Each structure stands twice: as C-alpha cells, then as structure tokens.
Image (cartoon, helix red, strand yellow):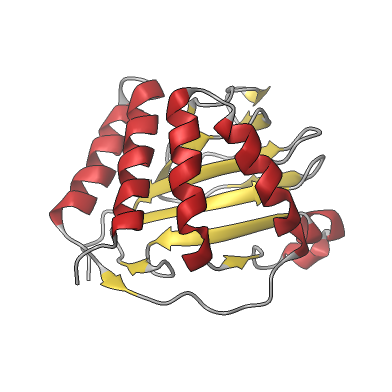
Length: 201
C-alpha cells in the first residue's frame, strides 16, 4: 500500500529540517541512512490504538504554536506534524510511574517503526512532548538517534553536560550515549529518528 500523503509530507519536512541544521560527519551519515531506507521501501499501514488521551497532551497546542513561530523549516515541520496528529496514538514511557511528575508530564508517539502507523523495523521515527518544568530522565539505547528540536529547551549529553541546542537545530546521539532533556516554562517538543539497520518487513 502506498504511503499516505500526510505521512510522506511529514517525512519530507523532517528530512528538510534535519538537513538544514545537521552537523557534518556521523549525524549527516545517519540522516542519509534513515531517509534512503524510507525511500527504498514502504512499510505496512497500521491503525493507531484508540487509547484514552493523556493529560500531558493539553500542552501540545502550545508546543505546536511555539514551533510555528520558529524558523521556517521548524514552522513547516510543525504544520505537517499537526496535520498527522489525528492518526497518532500517544503513550507514556514504560515504568514512568516511579516519578509522578514525569509520568503525568510527558507523552510519546510512534510514527514509523514496529509500533508506528507505518510498520517497519529498519527505521523508527516518533515524537516526544514534555510538559513545562518536567525532565525526561537520563537514558541510552543502542541505535544512533537524531532529534529535530522544535522548542527552546535544555538537553543533556554525557560528554557535554546540559546545554541548549536552540529551536530548529539537530541533536545527534551516537549508540549507547547517555542523554536526557528538560522543558523550561514552555513545553518541549521534538521529533526523533533512529536507524536500526534491520531489514524492513
């Protein structure tokens, strides 16, 4: 089945946003791997689960509004993401109930990947929302990862400490590096993409 127009438009806007600010080197190579894989094959379509809405999603309109006031490439990405949101299912990170502030103050959605609306195993793309003054905890994972940063927010990298990448910039994490993020007085929104190297279904 062909990829939906709204999903393709989001992927095109994400690629353009990342390429606009992507640093040379490993991040640039990761970008090429991810989007070449997406062009090479389309995964199966899946319908999102009809789960009850999360309280943290009350912050999504403000996050999108802030992004739409940002640089042109961020505003375009925010518009394409907003158009796709009715098809997405938002969830909490597993085990987040150990920290009530985080549990009630974040949401993640899968767009492409094993749990996405396009099911595949070689690329995983999703979005994360963090409520004002809430931190997404330190974590790491084997796949390399790119973020398109859609809000002014604080980010942590084990070699840099806490820093501000700035709205519209790209954050790149090599495999297994420890990282985290936290929102200031406005919600944090970012779209992330991981390359797993597995073959698409």
